[in-house]
Length: 498
Length: 133
Image 1 (spheres, rainbow over the protein chains, first blue to last red):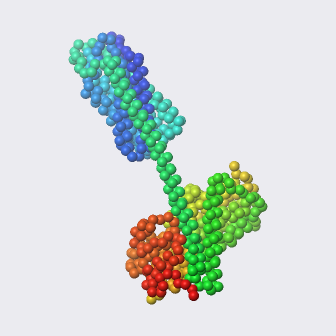
Image 2 (image 1 turned 120 degrees about the vertical axis):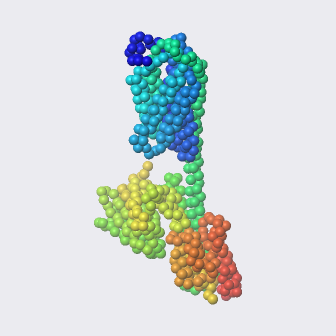
Image 3 (image 1 turned 30 degrees about the vertical axis):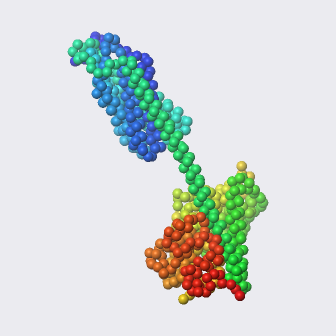
């Protein structure tokens, strides 16, 4: 048929119309299907396991949704006096194209790292699938009417399909990790825009059809008769499928949130159990020495010579001190947690505090073979702080330096710069791996296995808590195998921390 | 043959306390602060009658020490008694193939009788803690 559309319109075109209610339904389905697709992308990102199953089920729902939109919109078409039928095998083919295209697009959307080029290819593929499903479904139409095309509008409809698919893909990647209310609203808005675009594609494509009047040569129709009843059946089925898909997404999200909570609780329990085991080890060790010596003396095993008695009581005294220290540490942590730790602020020289801490720790430092150099630029560094708590911080830092850097020197540098006091403890120990630098200040955390280095895992936690109570900060720099440097920065006047 | 005990523990006070009582029980005591130092002693032919081994130590820990010493066939003649603190299951430790396992704090009586089992020289002496006259 040599039929330019102008000619067709001016002479022999048939009047056709769309039933408004079905048009509205088709647009609603398009929006629902688009929104479902975006929700599915979120679920699939969360779902590391069974991802392929999710992609398949999601593609099925999304494809069926988009196809239903088109088919309902086609059923909305009426040409007075003409019975329109649909050839079922071609309808099924168009449905399959929709589903396969959706599966491919969803699979692409779950890939986190996608180059712009890959994204364009995926957009094109999905657009082609939507265009394909539409025109195959048109091909399934059987009616005693001929038609021709306005090719400009055909091209426009395919253009809209490609752009809408590309936008959908881009939006799904953009909003798939945002689980807040804002993320939900953005997905809902994107669903509306996309749905309207897909519906726009369909009605543009329908506008591209020019019906040419009764064609007596057309074979009598075979297949499903287009009817309002059929339209409602398709609407019902697609709503059911999309509803199930959205409910599935919601359930999956609730489940994964539950799983996250459970895992966090389990982690907390594991961390507490590990702490209890380590605390038991730390308390058992001095009690072990204490008990052996006391039983040795009491039973008469240890010879009662002045030399051996002196050694025995030296051990006893040290164990008593260690136990007191351990219990104090545990109490500090519980006080800090209950916010019951009080600061006694007075005029203090930070250099003197550092030297005092070294003296307090002398036996431990000597045992570890560590020499400590305390340096200060410009004499005393005075400020108003809690002397005892400062000492505790420096002792904790020094004791770590000695523990992880046996037989190596430790440098302590103190200075006053820009109205703050800085104290730096530099060791040449085993260092801290970069991925542990953030966690070493956490309660019960340690950068090394407890199997190798004992300790409660509370020292740096206490340092960080105390220094922030005094309004200061603690930072760490470290490189594995070279050593670590801890830097305390304190305002010269302790302000009561909120 | 001398009743010689090798104590491997990272805690200086534990080493000193055990050394103090074991010496007065009549043992010759060798000490090592961690696994690799203990290995060095064995390689140099220290040949103790029994090794008292802590599990949690920096450097080479107790499990690593056992594995390495076995690999070098240094433990063929020497029983190892694990003396460790903290919460661990005795079965897990015995699964390492050690002779015995004591939990810190260890009772002196218990320590002495365990050592007697693996140290024939002392068994003939008394079997329990020796008393001062």
